[in-house]
Image (cartoon, rainbow, N blue to C red; front, side):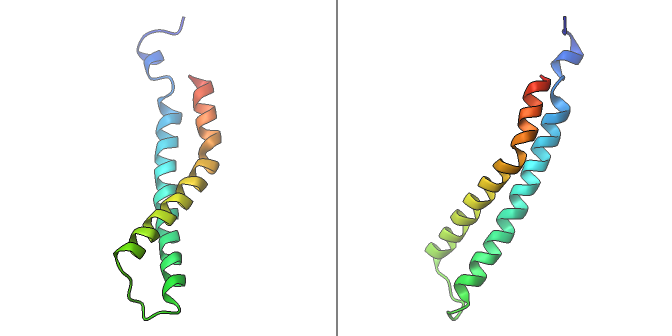
Length: 84
C-alpha cells in the first residue's frame, strides 16, 4: 500500500509546478490586458480616467486572464489529479 511520508507528498511536485505556473501566467496576462485596455480606452480621450473606469479595467483584465489561465493550465491539474 502507498502509505507513509512519500504517500503524503505524492502529488506535491505537480501541484507546486501547476500553482507557480498558473499564478505567473495569470499575473502576466492580467497586467498585459490591463495595459492594452487602458491604451485603447485612452486613445480618443485626454487620458484622464476615473475610479469606475479603473475598476472596469481591473475587472475585465482579471476575467480575461483567469479564463485564459484556466484553459492553459487545465491539463496540469488533470495530470496532478491522476498522479495522486
